[in-house]
Image (cartoon, rainbow over all chains, first blue to last red; front, top):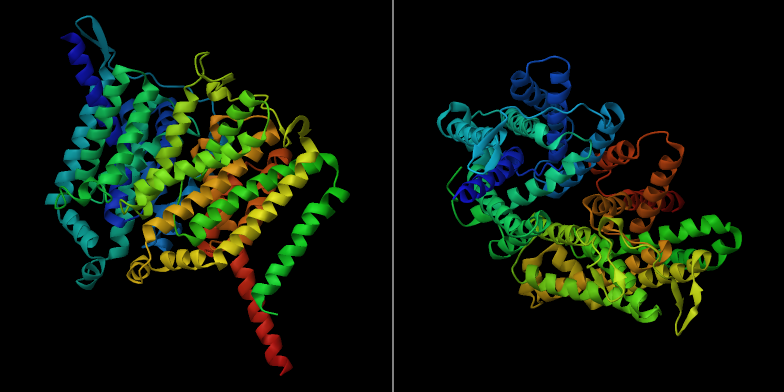
Length: 288
Length: 333
C-alpha cells in the first residue's frame, strides 16, 4: 500500500516536472508557431539566476520565484527583438537560429559562469510514507506546476490580455486590422514563455543542479512533449506530459531509468505516427 | 560553357587534386587530419541530399552515421576482416531508413514532426548504447562498453587480406576516392529522373502526386540512400580513429551536421563539403589556440548565417558570380 502511494507520487512528479520544463516552450510554440531551441538554455540561465542571487544573499523564495523569471523574461524579450522577429512564419529557420543561440549561450555560460557553483539544497526535508521517504520538495514541484497551469488557464481565458493574445494566435492579420499591436503581443508572449522557462529552471535547480550544458537534457524532452502535444499549448502540454511522464516513470519502476527514457521516446515516436499533428491535432482542438 | 558544365569540370579537377595532388605535398600528420574531414564531408553530403534536395529535415542523420560506425566496429571485431563489415555498415542504416521511412512517410508525417521522430530515434540509440556498459552487453566477442565506447577497433584492410591494413595516412586516398564517388554519384542521381522527381516533391508534394508519382515511396528511397552514405561515413570515421562512442548519436553531433549544410547552403552539394571543412577546421583551430570558446563562436556564426545569409555561402557566391558575368557580358556587347 505504501509502495503504491510512493509510485503514484513519483508518477505525478514525473508528469509535473515534464509539464514544468515544457510549458514555456509550449506557449511560444502554440501562440507564435516558433520552436525555441534555446529553451533549454533559458532553463539553465534561470537556474543560474536563482543560485547566483541566492548565494549573493537574496531570500530563497524571492530568488526563485521573482529574480529568475524576471531575468529570463528580459533576456527573452531581447532575443525576440534581435533574432526571432525576423523569422516569423519560418519554423525551420527559427529552429536553426535558436539552435545557434543555444550553442552561444552554453559557451557564454561556460566561460563567464563556470562549472563550479555552490549548489542549493531543496527545502522542506522529507516526509515519511510508511516504510518509505519522499522529499517534501517533490510535493512542492507538483503543486507549483498545477498552480502555474491554472494561472495560465485563467490568464488566457478570462483576462483582457488573454483575449487579445488568443485572438492574435487565431488570426494575426485580423487582430492587427482591429487595432491590436501584434508586434507587442508577440514580444510579450515570448517574454512570458521565457519567464516560465526561467522559473522552471530555478525550481529544478536544487534537484538537478546547474551546469552550462544542462539545457540539452531539458530541451529534448520539452521539444518532444510540446510537439507530441501539438499546437494547443495548455491542453497539449498537459496531455502529452501526462502520457509521456506516466509511461516513462512506470517503466522506470519496472526496470531501469534508462529504459524509462527510451520508453518515453518510443511512445512519442508511435504517437506522432498515429497523430501526425500531435495530440491536439485531433483531440482538445478547441482547448487552450 | 554552361555554369553546370563549368562546375562539373571544376569539381572533377579538384577531386583529382584531392586524390593525387594532396598526398604528394601534405605532411603525414596533416593527411591524417584531412582523412577525418573527408569522412565528415561524406556525412555532410548525405544530409545535403536528404534535406537540401529531398526536403526531408532529418535530425537523425547521426543515427545512421552512428549505426554504421557501431555496425562496422562490432562486425570487424568478430570477423577480423573488414570487407563484409564495411558493407554491413552501409546496409544496416539503409534498412533502418527503409523501416523509418515507411513508418513516417506512409503515415504522412512531415516538417517539424518528422524532425522530432528522427531526433527521438537517434536518442534511443544514444541511451541504449550508453547503458551497455556491463560485461554482459556484447555481440559475439565485441563489448559495447556503454559511454566509454569501443576502443581498438581493427582498421580497414585490403579486401581478402586481413594482414594488409589500410590505416593512418594510407586511409586518405581510399577516403578521398569515396568522397569523389559519392559526390559525382549524387550529382548523377540528381540529374536522373529520380532526382528530378525528388526535387519536385520538395517544391510541391501535392502537385507531384497529382502527376502520378508516389511521393511516399520516393522519399523513403531518398532517405535510405542518404542513410547508406551516412553509414559509409560512419564506417570511415570508426576505422579512422579505431574508436566509436555514443556521442555520435548525441544532439550536439546532429547540430553540427545541420550547421555544415547551413553554412555551405541548402540545395548544393559543393556547399555541404565546403561548409563541413570550414566549420571543422574552425572548430579544431579554436580548440587548439583557445582564442575563444568554440560554442560561442560557432553559435554566433550559426545565428548570423540564418539571419544574414539564409541561403548559405555557396549559392550567395554563385549569384554574385552570375551577376558579375552578366555585367561583363553587357559591357562587352
